Length: 336
Ligand SMILES: NC(=O)c1ccc[n+]([C@@H]2O[C@H](COP(=O)([O-])OP(=O)(O)OC[C@H]3O[C@@H](n4cnc5c(N)ncnc54)[C@H](OP(=O)(O)O)[C@@H]3O)[C@@H](O)[C@H]2O)c1
Image 1 (cartoon, rainbow, N blue to C red):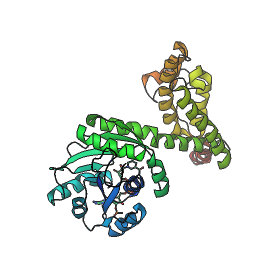
Image 2 (cartoon, helix red, strand yellow):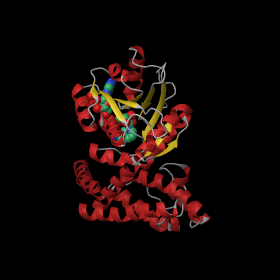
Image 3 (tube, rainbow, N blue to C red):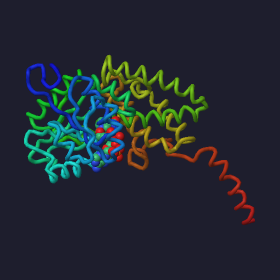
Image 4 (tube, rainbow, N blue to C red):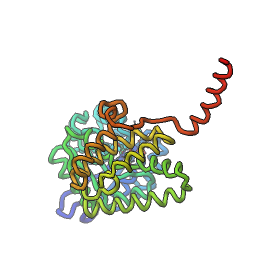
């Protein structure tokens, strides 16, 4: 950034407007202002949210009662609403005359393509902060030098890259037609990891570990695994029973889960099948154990599982078996 109002190459800098003052939008606007850009107006569904965001962003942006009033003050309009409100907000702006040629309307969703957003005569684009943003202070720190996935027409992408450079961040571009797939990948890299760790925590505690001990085990494993992924990449980072082709150990895991936590068996199998292919790509898992592991981890009831001798599907836990026993005894007594 040059002085406030111009880029270092002398172009006029954007006047930024935030519509939808939630966690992501407010943190991004704050980071942009701290990077030297002008945030000129804020609007939200509730006036109180817009006022709070204006305080957090700093620099006294105008707090507007309607989105169209805010949009008229700027050149680059950030839509920080939830995904479901992006289309209706854009339509409202266009209908109410809040948009002019030269306006760039930018939503923050990773899932929705910007093309097709009804913003005529403005242009639409998307800037997806590739981060999990939970609270304002942490989100501002993350966004300051974060990663952003951009999507939109070339001229819009040039404007967005300037913003990302001003933030000290990095940008990747995503084709509009693959936004759904891109966002599914993001969900696997973030939300699914948390879900798998929740299942791991539950399993470790069912094995008798205290919550603190279970967290320590997870930290040690998830931390060292992530460092391996960073340093040597996938597939080399895969270790463990599947990577080594230890079929009896994997069968033991399935028996142990089946006995006490049968609801987790399908998850273990699904992830196991993916791990088998990673192990094959790594080269440490040989063809024969890979075939046995594929059968062992096939979905319950599939032809592959029926052909595995001694395979046990999800079983009732020993606790539920114990509970069922007196009922059975009662039934046979009443028949007698
Ligand atoms: N949070 C993340 O980790 C994250 C990461 C990357 C991308 N994103 C994207 O960022 C966007 C916002 O997510 P968020 O997590 O920041 O959501 P959020 O905290 O729920 O904030 C959304 C805000 O939008 C406002 N809003 C709702 N409907 C509106 C409407 N019709 N007009 C104007 N404002 C409206 C709400 O305002 P009021 O308070 O006034 O009701 C709310 O504060 C989404 O597109 C999301 O996909 C989020």
